Length: 313
Image (cartoon, rainbow, N blue to C red; front, side, top):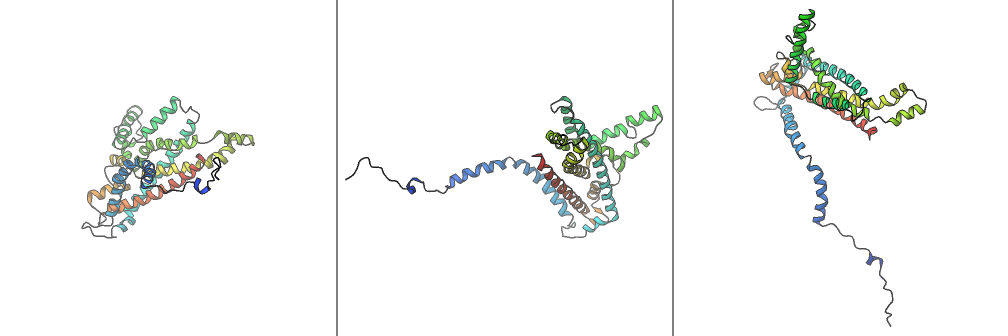
């Protein structure tokens, strides 16, 4: 006898839908968002490949080839010759001096900017000027300094005619390696402002308040809290400035037309003459030396920036 209203027993297995593997179309849909994330990087990746990776590879590989295209190590020992080592030493000290001066002056400017409003006109003006001046280089910057403190520059002529002071020695020093110092510092300071100001702005007011609550002084705050936190960012920016000066070519080429006192100018000389110290394709070996230096510097910069990002999150 069957009861009409008797409950129907359904097993748990019947209620739970059996798991289904995603079809090919569903898997493709899931992959599309992941691919879309990287699609925007395609133009930048192509730019890096065409204008950075391929030229760098060609320049480095050419240092291990002869004019006939045969593989050789004869060009590499030229990096350790006295002339080349002296050129690298000149590049190192110019880059180091301009990086240290630019970092210190830029850090002081950043500290002064902390007293201004973030959306104020002064902050906006300095941010905009720093962004422009950090990229202002090459022939235009060289001409600006020649017209100002060169042999017949405005300041040179005024000091000589009005005050009888020949402080710039007719501007001859500007066309030598020491003349690169003020020119490089001109764009190093704005670059430091751009890179170091976000780190200073990342200091939280709660840290200063906690220091004051625990009886700490302003000196204690800066020496035990702020400076240790800012040190990786400062030295990372310092390395970035060093790399920026070490790889600069156009400004130095416009100022120094004779000789090859720094590595980029020596590479130019090797490309023009095709020989240096009796070795062919020496420009590729010089490029290899520069690449090694830049890789080490940028690795240090990346390591320091990763340490800075830990407390900025």
